[in-house]
Image (cartoon, rainbow, N blue to C red):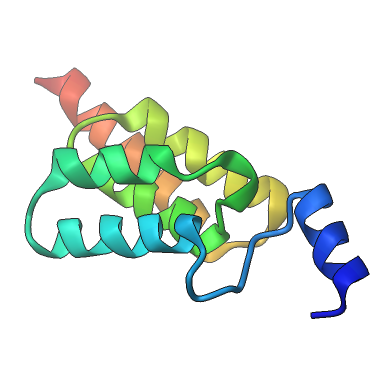
Length: 109
């Protein structure tokens, strides 16, 4: 990358596409932990990713995991963050609907 563009990307908080990026490594670590069924460790890894490096895909994955552990507020919060970036994101809208249904089911109990 051209030095100025590299500096500008870092300065503006653009996500790094560098395969050795610590933020990308955290995302991969979180994904691996989810595959291993280590939800709490995966949540910790997702939380370590700096906000300016969070991708839509990573936010959606984190939201799904939060639903699995019962943190509906957190899941909807990440879905809303995705929708702020991509207003027509189908997955984020599906997460919101899923949480609404789960909360309604819990209230009926």
